[in-house]
Image (cartoon, rainbow, N blue to C red; front, top):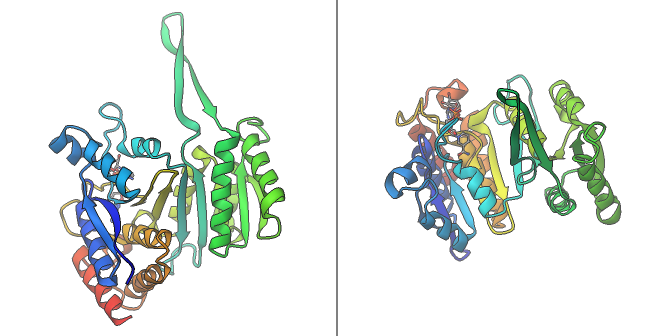
Length: 343
Ligand code: NAI
């Protein structure tokens, strides 16, 4: 039995506490060795501690360097700044890893199994934006500055290449727009090509594709891709596209990997429309927990969890409403625990 691993647990807002409880229940059934430090953040943090990202939560992650978190609510337009973006910046979570794998067959696309690795800190998302006034129009011109660095690109590309090798992937595709944004995305493409030639050649195949063509190819023939690695904005868009290919938000996990910590979460938000009703699909967060187990080199437990999810959905046919089923979160969780016990 491995020794205990300290980890921060943030239930979050909306359906967060429901899906986090379900996930902790299945992790306990697996015998996963996490020692949880429960912390609050998001709307709950604001209401109870006066900050959507309270110092206690930050201190906890600084100590454990590992977190599983539910969705955190962020108001649109005004209000407080996204706690998710603050977490990314605070812990330099430079790599966003989003696998998209078909779990329930019979959708528009079957047998999809690809991974998108998105640069999480640079590019057009750094928030350097401003307006220029002309005559009496203060917003006559809008300007955004994108910044990609050689060092930031190399760090992310190395992560993607190492991940491809560690998980037995055969092909990595760099997605860019270097024909138009020759400097901003050219640096990413050049760095990736140079890194491959120097350090990774022969260990997998490397190719590249322009973002617009990539979007079309993903919809026409997603099976031609294996690992896609790209800059911040393109990665944000493509990873939602890939989520759409495999049945939507309830099925898509994400990992934010950084120099100072790693944070695992579902891609979806707090789903306020179904919060408190006991019907949320906890699969995405459970798959994020499987990624967390992989990250902690507990691959056997990660595989048992993924196998139990496959069997519960496709053999027992126990599914929540978003997948066309009628099971509650609790019924689905009980079925998973039974599968884990039988496995
Ligand atoms: P959302 O992802 O919460 O919901 C979109 C739709 O998908 C809703 O109809 C919801 O019921 C459904 N849905 C989402 N997850 C589901 C699940 N596990 N099971 C069943 N149905 C599910 O997106 P929305 O409504 O735009 O955002 C709500 C809040 O979440 C906002 O405050 C937003 O800022 C926050 N958010 C937080 C994220 C995070 O913490 N990582 C990510 C995305 C949004």
